[in-house]
Length: 250
Image 1 (tube, rainbow, N blue to C red):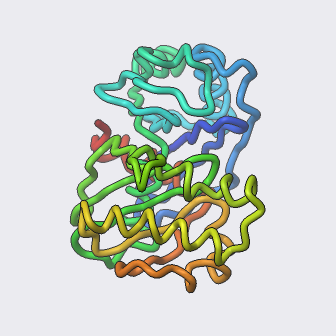
Image 2 (image 1 turned 135 degrees about the horizontal axis):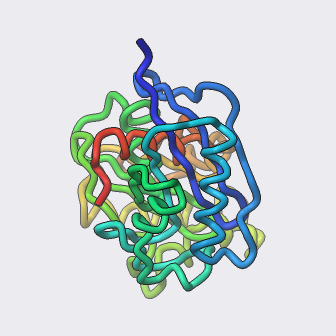
């Protein structure tokens, strides 16, 4: 019998959810997406999550990602969502919105990292794997032999006088009108600093720009192998479902 779970990925513009086959990492049925409420205050987002779960006719526990640092179910930051999330007991909020059922809450990049290591580009990797999502900023997830070190936020690390994401987020490429080769030079600078600090065995590049990996990954000059993410826009959903099934949320 197929073991299933349910994950919901909360983003700045959309809230996406689906039923996940926990033996393969594949979605069962269609992904459900609703617009993120504006303003994206906690109660409105929780109601949207509950609506997605209702639309899917899912009756079990639910994993939810947030673009936030999350410790013990509490949101400690807010990126691309309303600042009222900061200090919110997100786990209790979602449990209440879901009628008292179990809810697990974790950072969105951490969820993507969990999914990629179990079912995606890092599934055969050993040692330290770092997933980086290149978008408006740089999200990060660090795992050692599949075990997550949560809430790393190394996109904010200073690299030669600037935050890493102010050098190498894909939004910087767009803003500055850089070529892929020019942007890859900045990404290499950031990855080299991460290598000096963390000595990873593999980088996984996520975010929308990873779909065009052939245009920039070959230009990277850092030492550690870099591979594109495999799960793309389902990674957060899959990682959230894994987290609620295994209880590995921070």
